[in-house]
Image (cartoon, rainbow, N blue to C red):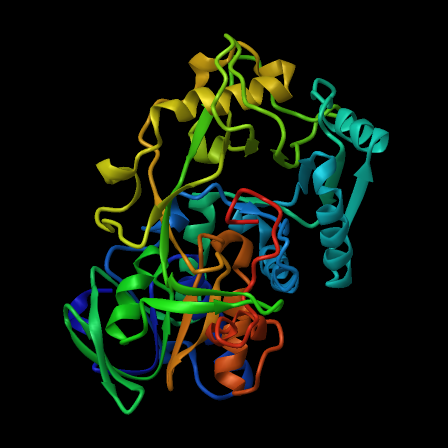
Length: 449
């Protein structure tokens, strides 16, 4: 749509056309019609660039439930329901997700396995020889020397990045959502704790309710709403961390590897392999020519990614790099010279592939040389916030979990239209930090786990 048709008011204004924004707008439209309380055209969706212009458009697209924060497991159950509702158009490949760890993570895997299944998210766990045998059955050339424990999430998989973005936008259109691109939000008119208007580059929109899904730009909206840039984090055990930064930026490290002619990255029975995640907390990463990286820590993930790589290949990454409370937000991603993947990332990632798979030895020349950049804004405990931040302003503040949490839009839509609490969203309230419910029980070096 053109900016000439930007309305002066709307029942709902959804800010941001990433995974969360489009999912929320689409589900709002469906929920309004289902309940008889409105229609899709009551929902306005705006973005300063276009669909998937932030992290959604460059993400790896993994759909998994490997979280040590147990309440997330219920969210993921709903997310898989969304992916399964139209897997062809979403490009959803339900191949499963396999996580591999050393013995020091067995208790963590046992806890996740129990919690996932309690949430109705089927997973299997293997330890010791059974873990090694399970991996060899999938990947006969897999190096199982340090593989002590395995978690296999059956409903998980990955979505085609470009396919998913296109399908979400189409669903918004089909349900009558009015979308406007090239319009930037520049602030909010506030009165007595209520958003009376969304200030945009094309005028102010009055809204009954506003849903903010701004990805890495969430910090700007936080400031416009007059919310604190520091807080005290109170934990269930009584511990307190004072004056923590409300937002911390992390720089992403991901890339693609093209397959050599005739090479098919397949399972032992010739199927698309599960997404693989490996964290070996006591194992160094060593290149094939003997260079040892300084950290005694092995972390990688990989999935088949012809759609993303533009040719037969795999995509994956490692732990993002912590930056701090400030970042240059524009331009975003691959266009920003400041946040490209470091030169060492190629060697690190190829070393992890070569260590795990014989088929990827001597494969360094196949790393796709292109710009790989992106950042994310993380909350103080690296767990998303789903909560009201004004009387009529709801915020989905997510630390780059979008593809895993497409179902949040469904739950938020239900809450907005019915006015009733949604139990799955309750643990992610902003008030958790003050109430002694801060998350933090994770035995991993990665903020996403």
